[in-house]
Length: 188
Image 1 (spheres, rainbow, N blue to C red):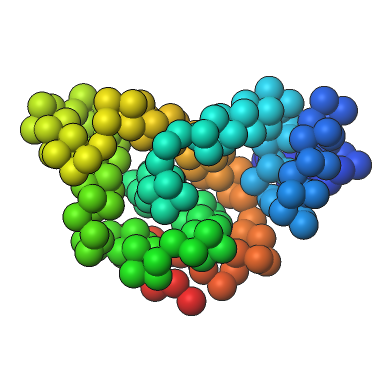
Image 2: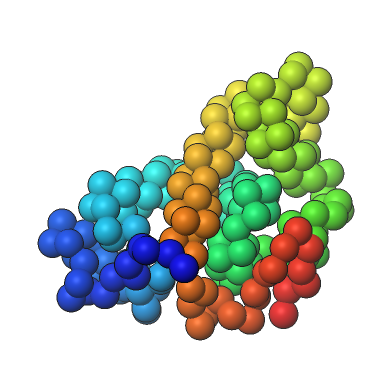
């Protein structure tokens, strides 16, 4: 069992409380991940800032979820796969895309599949992708800026994935319908 604390508004360090309040207002509840991040005011703030910057990329909501879910799947993060399956549904990401990401199968749309493959290659090679990977990504219609966007999203999600592994973050009720237990798992 983890020694990490899932904070409440009352138990969180003072410097984390404004972020906890804003997150609770935005989501309608305080996600356990944010409540765990709150132990470190720097982490909870950094995660929010990076998430805000990732939202500013020119990747579509579906493309951003592909990066986040692929990273979470590659890192084996059950919490983030369930959470982002739910967020993807809320953002109207096509169900077949969500299922492909959860089950590590091919996405029918070739451009989206190229993004998923490139994101996987970023993880598999720890950023040491080769020219073939870059050429395939560009051939699908992605830009040099999008390479950095993928790295930003992968870094953002790795922060939460690793935290969830160490903290054994309990899955929030709103994400339970999309529980994910491993490399493959069907969405509810």
